[in-house]
Image (cartoon, rainbow over all chains, first blue to last red; front, side, top):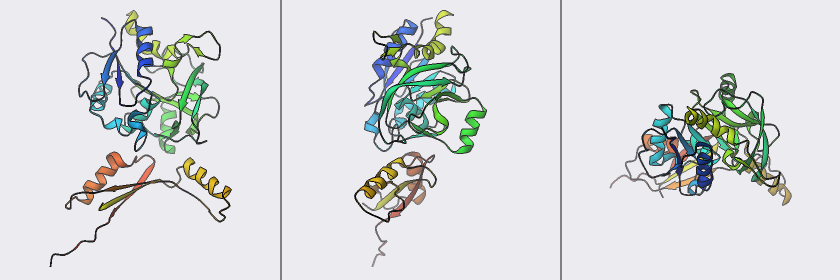
Length: 229
Length: 83
């Protein structure tokens, strides 16, 4: 059966097309584009992606308004049924604001927008999105955000680490995130939120400072098994 | 506006914005500022009978992020007894 991936667009999303291109590049199937006002998702989705951007102009708090949009109830239901959900950047903020992942993403510690390719240490290789990676592998993925400073109370952080739910860590200081957390998964391992943009690193570019294809592995983890099966 | 909601970062949560404002005040030569925290104020006109519980629910579900923020609800209009 053809792979069915969906990308949700909110007012102010700006990485939705990149996300759709990445899904198509890895799965060979066009991603279904969904508008935030849709209260229902198509049946039988294999992947739901919440893209980066500045939904609702970051009004109130990043992701706060979009987290209350009609489609997010359907996304929460799907996540509960085990459908893989990937939230990148604003998508990660949305997942924490909607309670699908713990913690919150605050203004960067250094107060400035950070836009560069960073080194990530892979800390989890059992989730739907990280199973194609190897433990302690390092990957290089671009970040571009002003509010990526991951915060949770100590008990939550201890639980995340104890349960192996930290997916990726920055290897240097990027935004002040507690315990250098760049991405986390839910208990079941089917929901991943991460600030770095894997969809911006799916093919090698002519110049070494651009591109790279390390982000592909995140998509291959989620898509590969289904497409080759 | 008859209701004012103050949303503030919880004590202990680092406030980079407050720190930047503090630095700016220092650089302007204002001495004696020990700490600065930046929060958010939301003014609302709500129907007269709106209960405290409803206002609290608004804060918990949307206006504040309970992971990092606390809120205070203030009612602004004095209650006037009918003559």
